Image 1 (cartoon, helix red, strand yellow):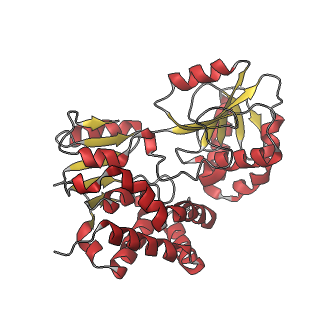
Image 2 (cartoon, rainbow, N blue to C red):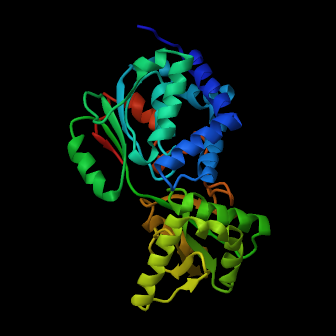
Length: 344
């Protein structure tokens, strides 16, 4: 059986990165992905690819993986149930399993099958080793551990179905932003990207905005206007129109920008086409809300809060920005030794 050492695995993923950098590759992948899923526009697929290309540099991969002492890992078969809410949503798990020398048995989302299947095909074309390491399966069986991403409803099914193996379980999350009222035009433009990129479907998309009491709401509406062409997408337009009709029928107050809805609410997540906001007078109000909703928040976008993400960078995580703040590599390394069955 062919094996690759860490340096060779890193080299293959670096070659993958070079392939993804080519415009011809991106154009082909975007066209095929859109045919399979109209939410995956050329812009969104391109953005997703651009987000992972920096990961696939030899020095980045080496720096990321070197602290984990892979020589102490026992090779395993890891099942991964992929998310499909945005393009390449499952790629970090895909990379984590394979770069550590494990076998991957992946159930791809029907919403994001094309991109990860194309990446798999390319890896195998450059090195047949990957054909023995990657299995794209309809069912996850015969594995040593499972990484599963799904809704809050499907998580109960995952907990039962995978009850006999170590399970890293991820549920619904969203992100928030805290404004001070002194943001620059560039920062507000970045906020618009954090909110509306991928139509707001990602866990790192901002769906809740904290706004100082005396800051006018049109600070947000002006920032969002640069992306008003989002309404040209029929699926987004349908959701926006539907949510607007629901609020009108329920006689709920809201602000309509003509392409998205701003609604005052304390609920962390919002439907496509709707953005929630809260007023605050003290930063402790934000901190208290974040603590209360910590299991639902992926990241905070701000210029001031410690540990927050800069405006415009929510959809550009680093390799060490693990989903749900659970270290995927650590989980893989501890399979077989952890005392608890579920990480979540």
